[in-house]
Image 1 (tube, one colour):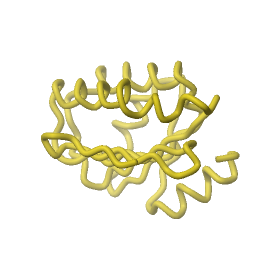
Image 2 (cartoon, one colour):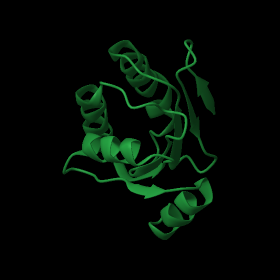
Image 3 (cartoon, rainbow, N blue to C red):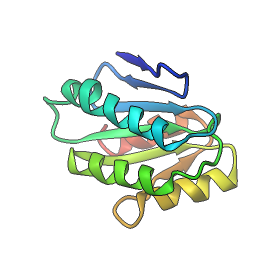
Image 4 (cartoon, rainbow, N blue to C red):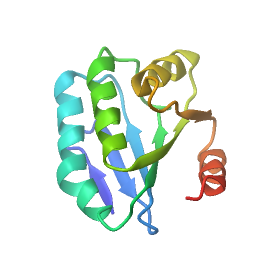
Length: 129
């Protein structure tokens, strides 16, 4: 299943196993972009993950631009953890983006950074996903 944002700010893809969600945020985000993203998770993603107790996320941040929505994204991450998120991998091309995304998980979950989707998927496979 692939979910595309109406404003072109992200795509969300749930893999066939139903245990890995791939997010691809694009460009600079505003608070309303995070709100749409969260609503898509509530209404479209979580119903697909209903049958699994734990799941993982891959966030491909190579097209994301550092945005002033750290608090909103942190709240979203905490919500996902409450819904069974166990592991997070990020794909980055920038040290600045890597630092910002590490802050969004706070102490609850620090994402593992990678430079390719293959590396991220291999690591998640080792984590049981």
